[in-house]
Length: 227
Ligand code: DX5
Ligand code: ZN
Image 1: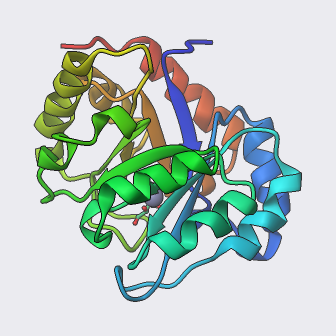
Image 2 (image 1 turned 45 degrees about the vertical axis):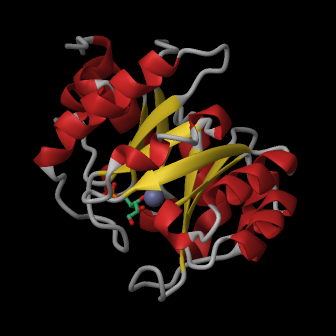
């Protein structure tokens, strides 16, 4: 297995009535992380799940839970998700009044901290934050719904984020994750632009055979060449 890359199925496209079974199935199918989309009908126009559901799935999993907070305000949710067993917690910087404080709160709770960028959010938020960031999450759709089309103009932004992460150096590894419209037929191109962690909701949970889909993604990734 190529350990440069991680695949994170998004629970948003799972069958919520059988969530424990679904997350066990994607872990058994070879997922590296579970991506957990939290929407509040305020920051985004949709409403999903909170810390109680995160705590309920935690015992079904050994792999890390990658919580993507699409909520505003952010800070009140951090401790709740850390207590619910989250391993990574990411938030949209424009939804937090004090970004440095929120990053600190996440790390103090023993989780890896991520910043999420919508397609039109500038990477300038990385200017004074990279020392506290473990994960840069680039949205390749506008957040709120699964099953949307990948926005191609995000590809050069992935390359730019990759350059900024590499230029930052440092002993700590910073992951570069892409979320939205990731499929078997574009995953290699996204990796070539510089991503190393791939969220896929409908592409995995909408397929008949989760293991075959993840295997196909890894095969495509093995052939990817970074520009
Ligand atoms: C969108 C969510 C995504 C979504 C991806 O707001 O953040 O994680 O589930 O779904 P697909 O892979 O179907 O685009
Ligand atoms: Zn997400």
